[in-house]
Length: 467
Image 1 (cartoon, helix red, strand yellow):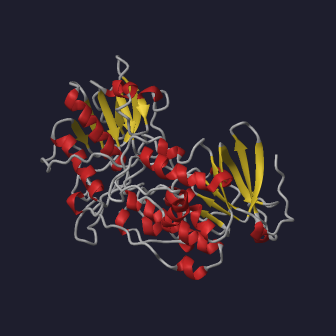
Image 2 (spheres, rainbow, N blue to C red):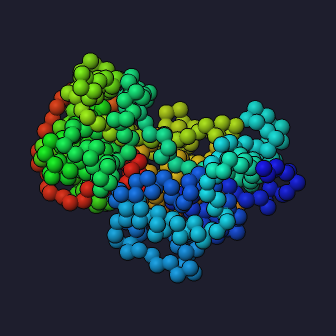
Image 3 (cartoon, rainbow, N blue to C red):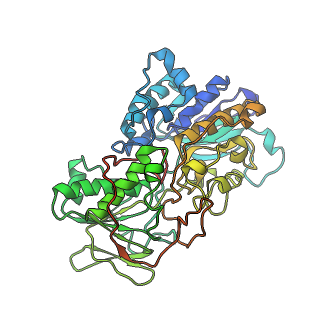
């Protein structure tokens, strides 16, 4: 056990970065500034969460997934950048970029270390006296059971939101019976190349709940399965209605693979491999006499039994280990209060989120930052490019270079997407571009007119635009 000391000047302490994922390893910006990082990763390899959706292809190209500062660190090692115009899978991203980058950091990345608490040295969240003069203390529990308290000058939490998927219940709580039916419920996009997973869904009736890119991906995968395996069918459950924006930006999307993904989901419905049930807000999961699952809505509707349920209703940040810090979070999104209006999925898509930095990410507790997916709280509109810009700005702020920290150095692609993952339960007014993209019609079972064919069927897990 390491016991912290207050005798070391704060400026000589490392900046602790929580998470060795894409944005955590953008700690390369700290290195550029001459600031010592210490990256703590709960998993045993870089990009542990990304590896859990290694079978899913991103809708961002390699050029948009490699951080410029990280590329500079990698260059002397002989690392060869992948084709910038190609689309990696999550596994590609982890193996060909994240792990080599973590290797460059050497012992500045510690694996198997789960952060269980962050505070000020000698000060809980109640104490004001000389609070800002105290360094941070980070409590870590390693996979072998040993514990350590690390003293830090600043803390950058890039731990993401992967660990806490949202439940079936439309009220944000688990539906009645959801826990007891856990063996038939998944909260991830299925890897149908895995024979055991494929057998779980082949020839069976599956409900997919959600309206973001992850749901689109699951619909497209299951439609492919249905082409070759008779009896395979999907019921797509949406809490809102079908509108012009339901399937994203389509051909107007400046991220072409993202637009094509929505069209692939649309094709699954049009070609009869899936039915869409709209305006369905689940409150219960029951079983029929054969043990199959019956979803029940708040209005009393009961769907025909299904064999499996895939829940893709968004992700949530784990704030439990930050409880002793004074965070300023929006009451709805659980994002920093100054960032929340810029990313509100009721208003913004991935491409209309204004690039932002340390000021929007700041909290009453100076020196602590939530970055990456975690900074977005429950909003699903995150792009990796946004996270890299966050990391650059935060590193400049920690270094005291306010001019650089305040500068915006990112232009995002535009998108026709205005939807998120199940967040649009109420009718919306006309959007600024004149399109009423989020209006909610009466609940109904729908079939939709045929789209242009598409072969792109993959996107990253984690909301409408997550990378």
